[in-house]
Structures are given as C-alpha cells and as structure tokens.
Image (cartoon, rainbow over all chains, first blue to last red):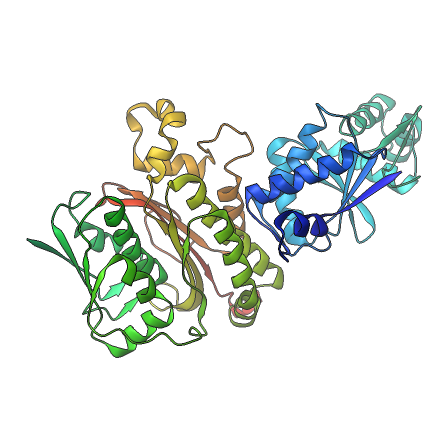
Length: 178
Length: 300
C-alpha cells in the first residue's frame, strides 16, 4: 500500500496562499509536519512524495522536508519513502542535503528508479540491479553483478538498512513494486 | 558639525570601501550628510549599501542623516525607477528634486530595491523574480533554463540569511548590467545587505574558540563561506551557502561577502578581486554580492 502525498497541495494548505515555491526553512518545517501527520494516520508502509506541482525547492526546504523526514525514520515508525516529480534543480538540492547527512532516498525520474544522496558505489549498483530484475536475493545479485556472495550480501544489507528496497524473506523488492 | 560622506561617482562593490571609510567609527556621533550629487552610476550593491547605512544609523538612534540626490537627471530617474528613493525617504532627509518613480521598473532590473524583514518577504521576493528571471537569464545571458531556478534558490538562501542571522532587516536588489572593465559581458547581480550583527558576532559563541587569536571578521567569513559552519547546532545548517557555491561553480560566477572589516570572495578566473581583504573600514552588518556572467557564445 502506498500513500501518495502531493507536496504542492500540502504547501498551498500550509501557507494558505497559491505559492508553488518551496522556500524558507519555516515553510519546509511546516510541510514536513503535515507529511508526518498524514503518515501517522496511514497504514501504508510506503510514502510517495509527489513534487510535480512545485516550482522551486531551495536547500533549506530540501533539508527540512526530505532530510529531516528521513532522519525521523530512525525514531518513529519507519516507512519507505519515494520521491517523484522532481526537476533537475530540485533533484540537485535534495542530493546535496542528503549527501551532507549521509542519507539516501529512492526517486522516480521519468518512471525510472534512481538513488539520490549518499551510498557506497556497491550499494548504488545493487539498487539498480534489484530494480532491473524486479526482485533479487543475495545469490541473484551476486550472479547478476559477478560479485562474490559476501559482497552482494553486504550491499543488499545496506540497501535494506537505508530502507531503499522492501525485504520479504530472502528477497528484496524495489519499493514501488507490489 | 556635519560629517560629509561622498558617494563614489561609480558606486559598486569595488568603491564601497571608500564609502564605508567616510563614516569613521561606528556609530557615527556627528550628523551625517551622504552626498550623492556627483554619482554617475550605482550598482544594486551600492544602492542597498546606502540604505543599510541609513538603517544602521536609525537603529543606533542616531540623528536622521541627510542625503543629497544626484545632479544627473538620468541617474536620478534610474534610482527612482528601482525604488531607491522610496525607501531612502524613510531613512534620510532627502535634499534635491526626486523624480516620480515610473509604474514599471527598467527592463534590466530583475528585482527592485526590496526590504527583507521576515520569511514572508523571502516568499514575495522569489515569487516576484520568477516572472522575469527566465526571460532575462535565459534570453539575455544565455544560461540554461534550469539555471533560472538555481538563481532563484541562491536568492532565496541569501535573503534567508538576513532573517536568520542579522537580527534585523535588510535589503535585496537584482539587476542585469554590463561588466565592461572586468569582463566585457552582461552579468546578473544579486545584492543583499543588512545592518545586523555581522558574521563575526553571529558565529562568535559557537565558533570563536576554535580559531583562537585568529578570530575576527575574516575568520568568521571563512568559517561560514568556506567551511560551511552555522551558528545553529543543527547539523543540517550552513548548506545554503554551500548550495550557492555549487551554482556559482557551474556558471562561473562570483560571490563576495563583506562583514565588519573584512571581505571574502570566491573569485572566478575572469575577475582579479582579492580572495580575502582584511582591515577594511568598518561597515555594519553583512553585504553579499552574487554575480553570474552571461555565457560565452561557444559555451551556449
């Protein structure tokens, strides 16, 4: 089950004005609180944050919304988070703040899953491989990437820890695959 | 006794120190006359620098300074059209005939002289500039369309610094003009200035100890711009300037920040500014200039 949250809609509700620009830290914090509130009332394990109605996303808002939402996963009920509808400049702002915090998030860019933020190269390669295959266990990943199994295991473990794939027994699934 | 501060004929970031030196020790005790009669041109940095001086004197409960308007009709008209006199009239006793501002600003002005006092003002600034930024930055300067958004991000972060760090209000203006002497090309310039506590005092309680005897205006600017530190203990802070630096690196731009008695700049190859200038005449608050040059034809 996926909870889709339209950030532009939340912004307009939060700011009580027709803004399409996500700027300033207080605005970002207010939007994040609304996201957390929505998620707290949802049974869905995956939150799909849709930025397609947003014009500008500055660094302060990228930090307040995305980085702090991911950081809060460590203390609250953890969710899988996926972003979509990002333009290049928004993508860059989010990437910068996530790298700063050594965090990562999955995003859909033109329907293709990509990783934004900081992960080891092996983890990034594993993410791409799981997404291409549709699902993978350690053995599948090792075979696909021609890696020894401990290397594949470590990469899948990191993906799971970062909540970048959905675990089901030994298998790992891309976040938006049922 | 009245102290006369001459506005440089060509008033920009380069001649700003000459203007700052005119004030002597802060806050000035004498009545001040800011003499702009001989002004031939002022960049956004120069215009909002004058307003910052007026604001700082008002906040220090100093006597309302005088400001004589430029003799040149053309210069006067331009200053009126970018909104300078409208705000200056609240801070200075204006002497000389001030023309009425036109309903719309000049086409090379992306953002009139605008006060920034609260986060809501940052929203307004970003909304306002988005209407013209794409046309000018893409159409005139040859920047890619997505650079427009990054330019607005840099503007947003610069303005937020006033609200979060200055402890008072400030000013912003954005303009396009030709950098004849230094570059020979058109540039878009964001100028932001406040009359607040400055970088040294803003960062002192959290970072001065680490610098020991080196601590001062220059070290504080270095900590903020180069090391990305913030006075807030939140580890996510300080990324606004980091983001601006990334944008400038991509578009061969320049940032210079003056605060107190120092100015620190990230200097691209087209400019010959000093990376760090220290022991400058004191000026209150902080003044930021971000310069994005038009892309050379072969780079487009």
